[in-house]
Amino acid sequence: LVRSDLSLWEGVPDEVKWLVQAQVKLLISVDPNALLYRPEQLEMEQEHARELQTHEAQLASSALRDRALTPRLQRVIDQLVPHKISEAQFWANFFSHVDVIKVRLVTDFLRAQDLVTQAKKEKW
Image (cartoon, rainbow, N blue to C red; front, side):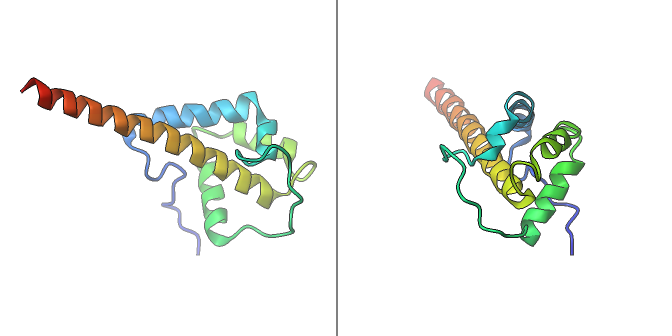
C-alpha cells in the first residue's frame, strides 16, 4: 500500500520549507557526488545488498513527485544509479542528507522564534 500523502518535507514549518527545499536543490545541483556517501561518512562503505523498505519507497516516490526537486533529482539518479551505487543506497544517502538539512534549518528557525518571543516578553 503506497501512501500518496507522504511528504519529504513532513515536519518542516511552512515558514522555512522554502529554505530547506533550496538547500536540497543546491545539494543535488552543485555536488551530486555527495550522495555517494551519507553525511557522516568520509568514504563509501561496503554496501550490503538490500532493497528499499516500504516507507523508503514511499518517501522516494514522494520526492520524485515533488515539483521543487524534479527533474534535478532524476538527473542525479540517472548519473549515479546503478553505475556508482545501488538505488537503495542512493535513497538511504539522500534521506540522510535531507534529514541533516531539515534538522539544522528547522532548529535554527525554532531557536530564532524563541529569541523573538523572549525579546518581546522582555520589552513588557
